Amino acid sequence: MASRLNPYISFNGNAREAMEFYQGILGGNLTVSTFGEFGDKDVPYANQIMHAQLESDAGYTLMASDTPPGMAYHPGDNIAISLSGDDGDRLRGYWEKLTEGGTVGVPLEKQMWGDEFGALKDRFGVNWMVNIAGS
Image (cartoon, rainbow, N blue to C red; front, side, top):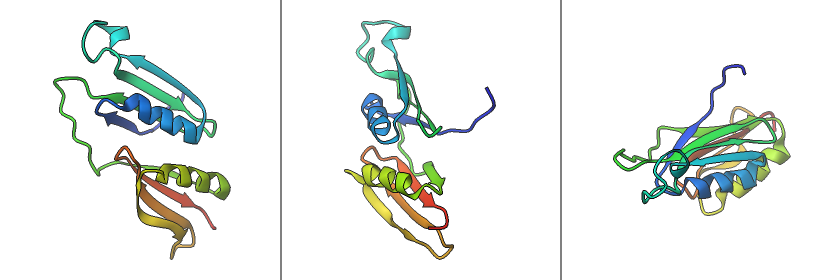
């Protein structure tokens, strides 16, 4: 496998729900491993996600986990997931689904640089940017 760069998102007990939501939007194959599968099956967090990976039909990769007990959880505004390209219909479809229950910061519309661009925070508090080239 070649090197790749992809987002890794930490959640506070709802990683499975979030990753299934993203799979519903992006399609593809979702693999999930719980803390219980790799440790004590009787701990209260056994069913939480130790690692999840979504390989989308379009070649996108998202990874995520629930924050285990003893580690601090600080959802932040220091990460955004960027979806970009020239397939306007596909990217607009992603945008519409991501806005469900989320908050739009910048509406998806033509910008001064000539592309369509929008930014939002989804219902899980994750920031997304969508850029449609040359729209």
